[in-house]
Structures are given as structure tokens and as C-alpha cells.
Length: 228
Length: 287
Length: 118
Image 1: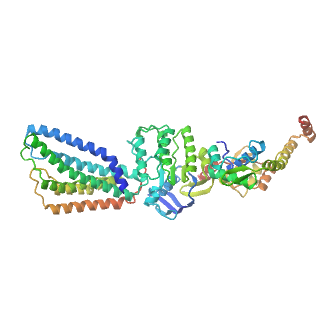
Image 2: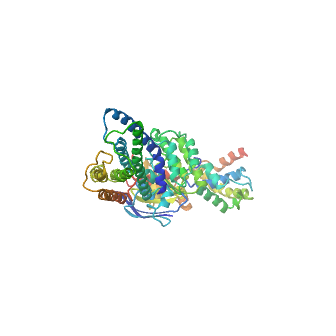
Image 3: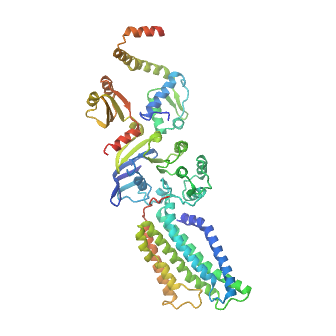
């Protein structure tokens, strides 16, 4: 299991670094432009990287089964070890992103303060805010990862049309997390039906449930011949 | 010992492997012969734990290999649709394998890559068919897996590359003994490497025999039609050909000295039958 | 491929080595290639090569020196000659005579031909 996680990490380390650099550059560039144009009411870094990281994880989740499962089994790894190892890798990456987002926010604010003053409505950064952001982004990242993995697994395991049908339940973890916990970093977070604790619980339950379903279905999946 | 009991593999309505019973002592080079669609690949898939049997059991020294980390780690299955990432460079493919397989010999892999004239910087998607086959061979041999399954791996390679493959397979097998199962429908030149031959047809076991014993199993009897008919009466005849008054019959089962003398006396000519021809006759007769 | 795939290779191996002993290419008490070397040289399965060698050991043509290898027996040549001599008449001469009869060639004609070769 550790071997799988390390192997995935080795594969994706350069990718993740490039990705984050790209996001940082884009955010910096756009911020400079936007600042001239208007008073932005949101944290640009959070919005951009918040979206970017969660979609990245969704795609990563799909790839785990579309591409990687067969590679690992072909090299002597059990499906069990692959599932656990990729869960470990995915979980750590999601956690890593959830930590980087508030840090980036802090840096962004620092840059604004050095340059002049942050625009009106810019979400203030503080230690408490950082923790809040982490607590909101982590379940979202995890939700998108699991949604991607579910969809990828569905298409690998079943016929293409069944895969399509399973997209609907598949997006639940991502949708639930986004709906219940998303919007952090936006100017006044929209009123949601649930307080944080409840929202977190629901999101995690959905995510974990779907993850368990992936495990149950894929633990003895046939490694088909995929063309090329 | 690999024990296969009543193994059945079904794809929807098709039966690929049909209640197969087979015992394979480890440490030998096996030739798994069968026509296209005979169930060879399905059998190997189950051996490699790539799929679960529909029915029946399989055990390696008494243990079910499916999802067994130790046994799966000691098995390498190379099939024609190489299980590698297309965009990866050959070097990356080898790095990946070396990181995951404890038995993988990276140095040997590099040596083989050079022998097969593969450029390690080339991407898999840019390889020709022969080069892809060569890469499969590199992965299969360098894995040094105690159970190595090569599914028609060397088809697509040119004659020189095939020769290199046979040479290396034999040399590495002697240096690092392991169980090798080579599946193919083109026996010809590779037959000398087999210690044992397993023939499968339409999912069923036709034969499991020592290769050299098999080489003595067939005999062609040629001569005047009447004499041939008289001689082959009561024997297993695989095929008969007639031209004018001359008949040639292929028999399955050897002849002892007395029978050979009888054949001579009757004016019949006896000739040997190669494994390839035996295979064709044993799997084609019913069609 | 050096060997004819159509008959048991171990027998071909045994015959091949016997030929070498008879012709003098392999001398008595000379060491022969190990079965693995033999297998690699002729590109055949080592177990098959071992079977051929085992047969020769059984027939007394080769003997094994533990830890060192296989050697040609000291009286191998004499033994093989005697064995082949026996077979010479049954395997070659008798069939020749049968063929001659078929073609209407008389024994005197054969003897005359042989006299010329003396």
C-alpha cells in the first residue's frame, strides 16, 4: 500500500508542482489586472485555486481507474493494495491542497499589503480564517476526488452506458460538499441550511459511503485487455 | 505445483475455459498451445489473478493466488496489449516496474533494451509492433518473476529479435530458474525450448505431455492404399491423405520394434511427425 | 535449428554424441560440455539435454565425476563400435540385399563391385 502511494507521488510530484506554479502565476497576473479595473470583492487566489484543485482531484480520481489500476496490477500489486495506496495518496494530496489554499490566501494578502491596500471586500486573513478555510476545503477536495474515482471505476467496471448512468450518483460527493461547504472566500458566504458541523458530517458521510462502494466493487474487478 | 481443478471461465454466454483439470509442476518451461480462441489467454488471465474463475479452483502450492500479495508480486503476465502507459518513455516504464516489483532486475532490463535495439527515450506510443513486442519481452524477462506468463509475446518481432529472445529466455532460465509458460499458436522454432507441452482446444485440455515424448508420439505411414488401411486398422488415425493408389496416414501413438518390422515387411514407409503437425491434427480433426 | 523437431531430441543428442565418440572428435576420458552449456549451444531445453546425457550415462558411454562434470568413458569407443557393428548388418546390409533382390541384382554382381573397392 505504501509502495503504491509512493509510486503515485513520484509520478505526480512534478505535475502537482507545475500545476500549482501555473495557478499562482495566473492568480498573480489576473489580480494585478483586476485591481486596476475594479474593486474585487473576493479572494482571487481562493476562488481560482479552490476550483482548480478540486477539478484536478476529480480528474486524478478518474485516472486512477482509467489508467493506473491495470498498470499496478500488471506489476504485481493487488487491487486491495492499489485501492488503499491510492486512497492514501489521494487523501494526502487533498489534505495538502486544503493546507496550501489558506497559506496562499495569507501570502496573497501579504502581497496586497505590501503593494498598497487590499481591495474593498477582500476576505480578511487570520489564523482563525485559515483554519476555517482548511475545514471547508478539505471535505470539498475529498468529495471531488471520490466523485472522480467513482466515475472512473464505474466506466472501468461496467459497460459505457452504465457508466453514464452512474455519473449521476457519482457526482454526489462533489455536489454535496460544494453545496454545503463551498463559497468560502467569497464575499459573505451564502446562508446555508446547515451549520458547519452538520454540513461537514453530511458531506463526509456521502463521501465515505461512495468510497466504500468503490472499494466493494473494485476489489475483485477483472483487469481487461484495453486496446494499446 | 500449480493445481487447476474444474476451472471454468465464462464471458456472458461464451465458455472460454471448460472444466479444465491440470497440474503444472513449477520450475519448467511450458508451451501452451492452442488455436486462436482456444482459451489460452483466459487460462493465463486466471493464473495471473487478472480475473476470477467463473467456477473451479486454482492453487499455487495450495494457496489461491487471487488478491494474494505475495503470489501476485511473484507473477508476471505479459500480453500482446502491453499494460503500460502509452505516453511514457521506455525508461519510465522500466523505472515504474522496478519500483513495484522486488524481483525486477533493472540492470538486466537495460541490457535487454540495448540488445533489442530499443531507445529508452522513445515513448511507447511511438514504437512499432515489433518494438512493442520487444518491450514486452524485456519486461517479462527482467521481472525475474517465479511465475512468468508470456502470451504470444514474441509474435510481431522479426527473426533476429526472436532469436535474441530465445537465447535470452534460455540463458536467464538456466541462471535464474522459474516457471515459464509460453503461449502460442505458432510452434515451429520455439518448440525446442519447451520441457512440457499443454494443448488446449475450445477451452478443454487436449494433452499435457513431456515435449520429447510428444515428439515420438506421431508417425506417418505411407504406401499402397490397401496395405496402409490394413496396418492402421484399430489405431488412432489423425488424418489420411490419398493420391492415386498411394495413401499416407498420420497415426497418434508410437510403434514398437515389432510393429515397425511389420510395417517394413508390408512395404510401408514410416516417417516422424513434428509437434506442430501433431498440434494441427489434434486440434483440427473435429472441425 | 540443429535438431529435427520431429523425433525425440534426447535420442538425437545421444546419437550425436555417440557419433562424435566414434569419429574421435570426442576422446576417451575427455570432458564433455555440461548439460546447461549443451542446451545453450544448441538452443534446447536443459531438461531435454539432461535426459540425453542420462541415457548415455546409463549406456555407459559417459560417466559423471561429481562436482566436475561429465566425461567420455574409457572404453566407450570400443563399446560403441561393437554395438554399431551388430547393427551394421541388420540395419544396412540386410535392407541392401532386399533392395538388390527387388532390382534383380544378384549377389555375385555385388561381390564383384565390392572386389573393385577392396
